[in-house]
Image (tube, rainbow, N blue to C red; front, side, top):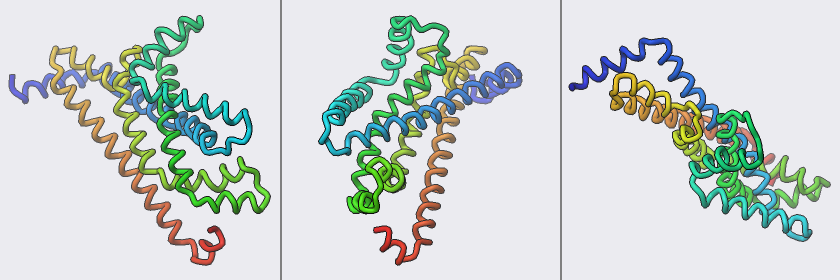
Length: 245
């Protein structure tokens, strides 16, 4: 069978509104899980990073630090697919939780997994900010938490933006394991399209192309944001920089 025939079969299948909608739903779920998973991961990761860099004078902070270390080790030490399977087929039935949408489970697990990686990324970003920034905030009467949220973390995010972009790309690619918990993602949709004519070569090539386009788009967006930050920094006068230092 030549390539022309393979493409003809694929295109004839895609003329069906059913399969068009199937592909759109799969692509939508893939993007939804990656985007919401990253947002949840940033929130969790930032909280963990703040605990990890906080002074350990109080017992409560030391206990939280140990809990965060176990959390990070757990989610970084097991594959995403194992976490999905345990959450959907073991944890939820054990807790007696029913009627939970598999897509919701996927978003939560992706977010918790991403949080473990983002925590280390964010911790490095916070440590890269000059210590004087925290001291300056405390000197003008701001609390530790307020100084961290309003001064330190915004600067840390600028430093780690490329790495966060890489984390987003990783999440996009890892969504291909969502089919293990019956989520209809991009992989599942194109596999179903390929099964229509028992010809999966072209659908899988199309899938690879879509993933590449998504990754290139994310990379472009990150670079544009980086340029915007760099431009805003250049617009700050030397006097303002000296005052903020």
